[in-house]
Length: 541
Image 1: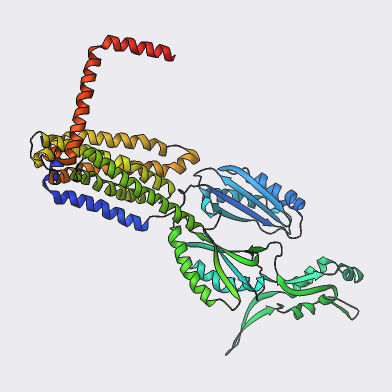
Image 2: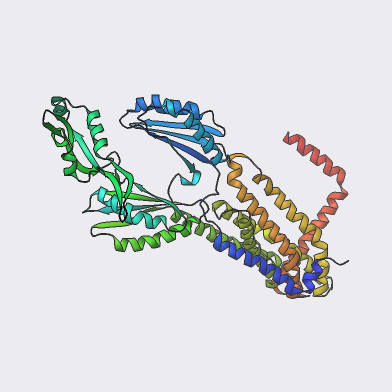
């Protein structure tokens, strides 16, 4: 009775084409598949930041954080809420349930926040909402910029104008955040004693700064031949401009800002400071897009950084302080090394038990085809190359050879019975269609339920389980197409009785005869076996 395996044995080119298609698909997936440390998990958080300038932590907690928490708690999809109230800032982090739609949650929480906007203090700024994925908690790379000549605010200004746009434009970069930067700002340090003597309050100073530091576009005027753009510009630019600002005019006496405060060009914030190797520095965090290959992206960032380093001003130095992909690369290299060791051990074991180089070639060829084909299935399912999927590939080495070994053994059995190579391959493959399909489905079914688990465990091990099942599936395809064809052309009649192969086969024959004789005696003495088994069970209980 003919079967579809006959087609691949009689037409070896077709079997080779099927294997090459699997190899090409897997190799292109190897070049484009996303590389990560761990599988991507859809665990998102929504961060709500509200600035209330001048308020202490207790005031922020009572008038900003608590009302927002009560309103946000009514939204759907929330796992738990964290909040932090500090000087002038309220930060609320809403952790969403696993696999909950972050955009839907953002819309729901935004509507809750808008509903109580009127209940917040009028001087508080508008709450800012942003989605934070599990991958954006830390940057993939941190860059350090230091200088012995420039001040931190000057370094920050250079980074904002020249470095940050270039790094953000690198393919795959989500954002490049400046950490510990000092943004230029006009600092006005008021003198309480002078203000009290002149009877001037801080509110008066703030109002005069707002009125005299104003920029607005008011339109334009047109004539028959001329058009002039009009601007209401009272913007102050220099320290001297601010010092000369009139705070109060009374009976011909002018009170200027310099009379009640010290004015200097400084930084917006002095509360944070970053140091690298003991030296003041400004850091820049490089965040990678969720669907981008972090290893390739940081490689491009390194190339751009080399160009930036050559163009830095005198006295300014930039370097990579931390690279998360270095650990990923080291871990992947270790797993690949383990994979090579596993392949070598499997090849030696197969040779010791089959005893022939020709017999070993068939299952050894099936291993890389199955593993590379599994990469294509990983790409098809949207998986990434991470530590767990690599672990699945390593574990699958011992599974993907089973089908090919069974095919080789069955074909050799028919060769020892006197069949020709072609007939042995045809008959052997026909006999194994059902067992190979059953073995493949059974092995895949053992690991697939792991992917159906819920919660964080299921999210982490889904890729592991389906990668393992995919490799087993590809090995079944190879065992029914390529392995019978290779057996028909590589195996030879009579080689099993010569050399090392003959020693192995005679050893197994003796073991089989020994085991068969002892099994016959055991089956002939069934009552004694039952009594012994009953007594053994009683003694154990």
